Image (cartoon, rainbow, N blue to C red):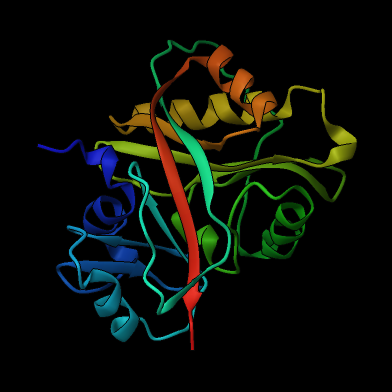
Length: 226
């Protein structure tokens, strides 16, 4: 039997994120304003054709898998990314939360601006609907944040971990990560995350906090080849 984390997007859409799910029993996707990720219950020869006909917009969309996958010609491959899936196996204590502010709709423009500046991964106008986004401010300026994204229960993904380039080296990302780990564990779930190959700085931080590599993962960002 395959592990639930081998198919994180579909299993999230079928369990912890089902309130955000669109599609069918076999193909599920988030609204494009929330997240580009889609999932197949099982990848069959005609799955990408069915997705092409089902998806109400051209894309881009993201397909995540532990297996290298050939993308059919009806889709244009935009940006394949190889990464690592990591799972938390640490034991956090003494989480400092005094400087952390829960983010809401009023903060969305700044959240989008920060992700555009730092490029932690896809982030759009309703990504905040995943919930549990927290940030650190310098006055009224959002300078660091982290939140949660896919929930393939009993796991929850930490996502959008980012710090403004002018504020790195102050431990903000670590502080936000520890809060997210604490929140996820309080719900009885296990934290996971994904990090792109080559992002060794983040990878080392995650290892120090208590994350271990579970699997290599491939992220295929594609759009309809009209």
